[in-house]
Image (tube, rainbow, N blue to C red; front, side, top):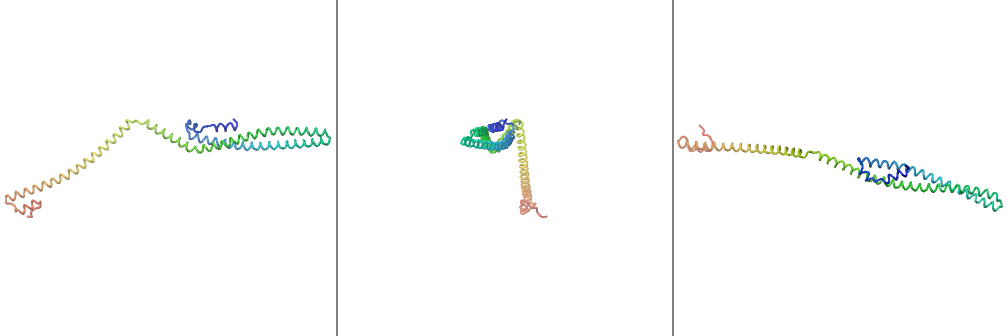
Length: 236
């Protein structure tokens, strides 16, 4: 396959389609750009060589055309001088140089057309590479996002939903148990405090009743009963 055919194949390539069909789009786009850059170097080298050949063909064409014109003038001069033999020889040489010049002119025209094709291919390839490089980051981002989404979906599809739900329910039950235990301990603390106050109140009531009984029996003075009623002991 010639350089133009290879470049034409690259230029016809649809980058997006290649990415969509590829198993690893990131590798595809990097490889595609690398291939394009390699072809670009080859095209530039080919264009330079073709331009050099074009100039050389044109120079040979001009050289032979100049010689043909020179012998044409000599033939005319010989005719003017009545030198028909010299005129025939001059015309013969003029025809030879003209034929050679025409041959180089045909090759030059073909070479010029090929140079133009190569130049156009070069411009298109440079534009294609620029477009690919512009899209490279976006395409790679799309590829990585697609991979991540595939991984997530695969993970989710492989999960046992009922098992996961049961695990969450167990965790919730443990949390509820811990909360209930904490609430119960709080209630116990409150009940203990209330019980102590109730005992204090009961002791005060018993002391008051004892003081009243002693007063009735004449065993204690009224002031003592008041003191006892207030919970203070009588000094002996």
